[in-house]
Length: 401
Image 1 (cartoon, rainbow, N blue to C red):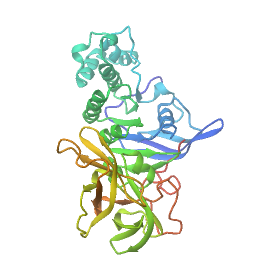
Image 2 (image 1 turned 90 degrees about the vertical axis):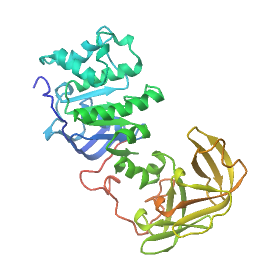
Image 3 (image 1 turned 60 degrees about the vertical axis):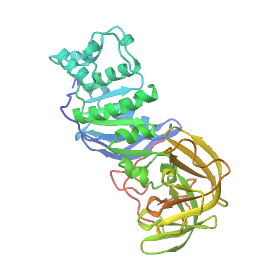
Image 4 (image 1 turned 135 degrees about the vertical axis):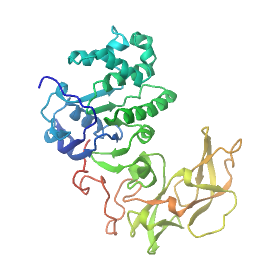
């Protein structure tokens, strides 16, 4: 076909056994992934993890060495980029400088011979709240406005799948946060399938319904943003999505509901349902904002973990919160985030303190703090969806580099 037939709603994307090899290395190995129609899906990971290669394969800018790409049930593996019902919004806006905003947005429609191109372009500009600037040239717009024009130009085509390649990376922090909410709103309004590729954790968690964290050629974990943040399954996910305090030691006792780990001579309890391993050497994590800071030893109560005494070795003010680094003998330094409810720090550097947290806020990882398998021979909870290319269920495995 000469041109793609664009959809009125999103379509599901399915990657079946995708492998991509370049001279000297394999970028993606046997990736299987399904993204439901109408969802906002984010591929999140550091540079070199394979997320951009995946996007380029879906867009048709690269050809897979093996495997098939299906969009709305149709095999598009061998289809040219301009024949796929796919549009991409890049970090660079790529607007035509000699055209007006309206002409930029209507360009694709006119090229495809779609009727009422300008009327549809005005509608798309109203969606991004820029119709009043339709007669301006791109050079007369701010960076954020140019990005919204690029988004309108992509959305106006009604692609079955919209690819977002680090689209907000060039914007300043305040504008980027505003655009995150706007993109999420627009996706809900138009009902298209969005595949967002980014290394920005906040961006992925703010906008996406589902996040897949990629690392060293695999999807480490996939799920709702809150699930990944509150219950990471590997040390990479725990550290890449926000910040975590990780404590490693042997399991010294367990019950039907809890697991007790000894770290640095102190005992830490975690709910059995929130731990990936229940025996052997286990790494327990807890987020800095879940910790409470005490200047006197708190009373021991059921369901609470207490570490200390320790010393505050660093105090860093960051606006909404203050970060305290606490050194407890035998344990790696702990980071505590405390919301700034009063003026100035609660405690100062050198203070003697204890930290505590509720047992239900901890989590037990499937590996060690350095990503190594610390629990060889230990009983292990079966990996959940998307955890590891070698163990994940069909349809949820992934590999990239």
